[in-house]
Length: 340
Image 1: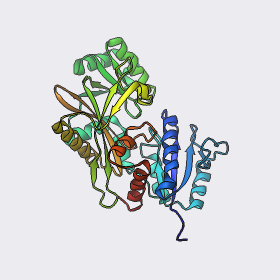
Image 2 (image 1 turned 30 degrees about the horizontal axis):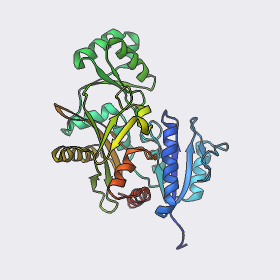
Image 3 (image 1 turned 120 degrees about the vertical axis):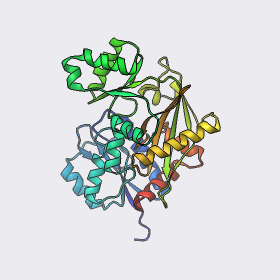
Image 4 (image 1 turned 30 degrees about the vertical axis):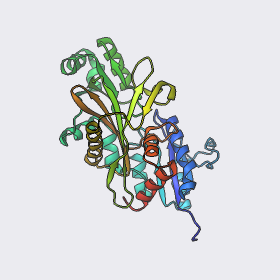
């Protein structure tokens, strides 16, 4: 019994548009758990919402996927000590899998149901930023019924409030899915249409400038959040915009860590990242994205389950801070098991 390694479920995949990225994050976590001292039990959630339990060495084996009831029974049979939720987007990052773990009394890495749900919704997160005095661009939430019934007044309201160009975003997706800059009214209408296909849209003031992101990691013993080294993202693609393609193709963006920025700016964004983590009531880890222009620092969004692929930003910052991927996994799982 003394030689038993704690069992860690690794949830990956899911029903969202970020399914493939999540599989890569989950695979990376599962590969590194043994070195961190844990036994991985991969749980692949299919695009149809079924559950497969492939061996760690063959994550593609999902033919025997089962429904939720059978999955819960299998999970209970394994008596897991913790769950590592490596799922991005709806049905994974928004509190639903977290609620399932709560009902099964399985502790898990990352934020609880409330923090996950609020941070996942970019509009709600923006409201929290404002209440906490965290600077964030002005924005307009699109009413989908009003837009579908008569888009003209909605487009007028966006142009009046924000001007053009402006940024159009999905409200509840990550990995830059459905995000783009609308240069004119026709592009604005088209991009809102596209974002609404994913469930919701908001328009945000456009701030061309330097893109920075700051990971936050909690101490597993005290639960105190601290900022890891700042990363600057320099996009080399033709759009000059950190979209989904450039985010996961190393040839299209340079991710410079530590970011070559003045010490006062570094202190500012690190402080804002920790403040955002606290204001959103997050746990374990997070990553907050910023834009910096001649008018100041603008907080864009906070990710409660940052990407954990081989090219993701959070592991890169952890390496600069002296942590291997296994070290990072160990800190996160230990914190979850201690209730931090």
